[in-house]
Amino acid sequence: MAVRYAAETAVASQDRFAHFWNLRGEWVEEPNVRRGGESGVQRVVSSYGQLLYVKRQTGHIYRSWLHPFGRPTVLRESDALTVMHQLDVRVPEIVFCGAQRDPVHTWRALLVTKSLDGFEEIDHWYAGGGRERHGEAVHDRVLKDLAENLARMHKDRWQHGCLYAKHVFVSVNGEGEAAKVEVALIDLEKCRRRLTARRAAANDMKQLRRHSSFSTADWKKLVYFYETAFGSAIKGL
Image 1 (spheres, rainbow, N blue to C red):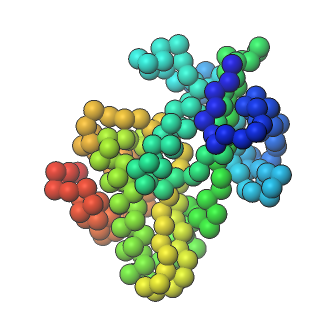
Image 2: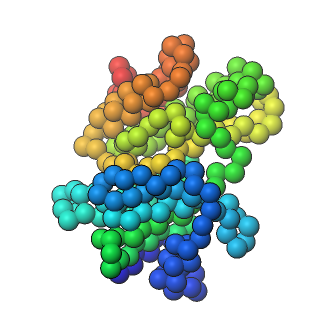
């Protein structure tokens, strides 16, 4: 059994699954045991020279009322990435996603995404002097773009579910007013829709506050941009 969530090609889905499953590269997230299986991420280079990230899982599932017997977590992440693109929330682009029953493991599953070329973790950007190099006006635009991406996600009641600073990536190209500023979110494995936008927002924003190094002043500025993008109904988070 195979599930396909990538752009159609002339290659059969099972052949594509085997192709990506057999690709090997540097581990950027060593396989860890959880959710009844293993999950890890490798950085690989495609035959066309494209840098890719391959999330490789065996028996790694989640359960919900829709899937009481379990479903590979990469399929939930693929669904979330597709929705985020529709909402204009910047996330990695899917190359391939698939899952197969395995004689040994309950599931083998893959999620292959393109590298966010030119992006780096926001804490690495700070540590590398990005704020000082580009100045406070550009830094404000970084916070504003992050806030606007989060607001678009939360207004549609989607919660990231693991919103740590290490899952926030930033790219700044150029200088001054001409600089192109972009923020992206990664690792949407726990992303799910909540009953209300407020619940999605409150959980993610509290989590980001706990798991980031924003100063009090910068956090207040981020919240201001966020509330402005979201609207008055979300004030007080």
